[in-house]
Image (cartoon, rainbow, N blue to C red):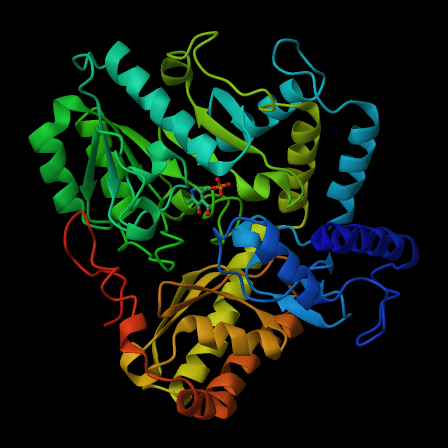
Length: 476
Ligand SMILES: Cc1ncc(COP(=O)(O)O)c(C=O)c1O
């Protein structure tokens, strides 16, 4: 009962606040009637499943690269909702489209046609050079769709014997959270306790063309597709060796395997090209897009392929109530327009280079603490040296970055991903590298003193891969 009272108070507070505040009107440290960050975090902990371990900051308003919390404190976003906000938060053109379309028509279902999806389909396919698109909503659904498409193509066109189709994927991959998708995962936290996983998957080391060819040689007649991220995001922004993408293209053609690029995170200008595959000018058979396709406002994902592949799926065989809805389609068109009009790929390439130069300078000051700076465009990672950082992890550093106004997210124990909106200004970018330097210089010694060295709490045991027994991303 006590909780119910609290909730109604909170909702009244949130709604009341919405009427009186605008982003620009809210000055840092101003007193607001909205519930406090701590109160909201407590509510979420109480009422929401504990399937995330967020950095304790509450987003209340956002514009471009800036976030404000309910207390009015300002932060620079260096995560962009895992690259879903490449265009910057609340981009005015996308917002205008969203509002106008929402007032006109939001959903038809694909039982009928609507006047936005065909325009979006034409636009997206011509932009990326494919015959057709299959629209979905979340990234994981896009990947599921690509897997089903590959299997169907495998049976219909490649004549793989029934029930024997194989999808090859990479060690360290991340393609989402559905059962089919986690069946390819090397992340024990994503898989343990969710068995049985789906059969029909084979793993290969990312970036290793020899291993890929060996797998194709051994099982090629049953392999329908090779699914991979051209740059592995969740694994810690792992960039394959030069020539790998071309080698994948050649091998997929040679062994008649569909090359399926998951560009959900690496695509749409994030890496400094429209697609990360553009770095080697390769054209996959299937491309999956998501995240920034919805401009940070609406879940939109899409699978692109040519007719000989896409038409393997027939009416009634796959779909989604919301896939291709007019609101999503209008938002996606506007999101693509912004990427193109604002030259976000070029911007990402240029600013990414500048960010890495700044980060390398930080590394030169702390060569023992920072193992590697890597990235392409504004898709970057700082890999910390676990031994020198002990007992601290990348998460602890992100907590301190947050205190200094920078929002970044760790991946694994030792990697901090830096992926700001592609609209970020040079000054904001500098705030990020300065904050990292300040944390390492001023905060770290005290943090190391204060944090107990709790070896029993170490993640290293769970990062030994259940599949292959290696420890690719754990503490070293
Ligand atoms: C490469 C890649 N594929 C798929 C997904 C899943 O997308 P979603 O969370 O929208 O289901 C993600 C999410 O981070 C991703 O990075």
